[in-house]
Image (cartoon, helix red, strand yellow):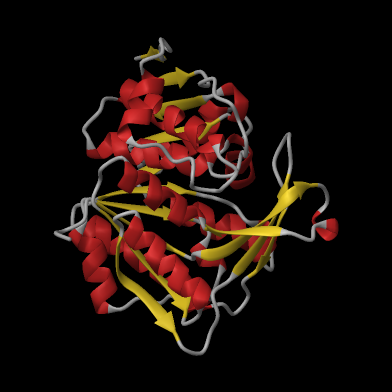
Length: 320
């Protein structure tokens, strides 16, 4: 692959999804898939035609082999995904539900993904891309992964690349809630574009209204803040104005991955030079389509599928 359009980094896990609806503790049969917020974003971006690279660690085990094979199948550059001999690929168990968000449980402490650490090679790779997408998950995994998060954002910005940041708060991965909000908020202020859910925005900023959440980051130098409102759609704020996108109507099978689809659509819009209205609309459309499959990333759309949904008349309301 030539220099990537976009690079992301994180942990790919084996995802064991219960085949029957009900509590996880009663599940006996599971389908093996792959999970990871950053993987979901990378899959979506690759399917939308962007040259996409991934940085991370997996175990030298069948799940790690499956993760690297999946990246290659999707056309994602896995040159900087290293297999670790002495650590295993993490696992996620996921509930099957018909309505609402499924429960999921991690088995990832001390996993290969937590061994992510900066190196001259990986930071140069990040700096070679036009865009870096980061989330608040890797900093929770280990001190070295946290260092990578900071140094990758610095490398990207120093190289003139744009940076998006999705807080993706995972309280169960942090020993202390205060440390989580402090550190994730600090990383968010280092991005050009911040993409919080409304509940995440309140946790990070102490403010409830989308406008106030956005103001917290705009006042600290962000170019824009897209606040996800769940079933109510999303809002985008920049110093020049604001835009609101209502939700797209799709048949929802699994809500996991919607936020990652939103992030991928937003990044795709940035890479394609779309204006604020078109970018927000693309983000909402990809986020909606991501919920159309029971896997975390299997529902990520191709350009053809995205264009078909966007052909529906869904205007974005804006103010300048």
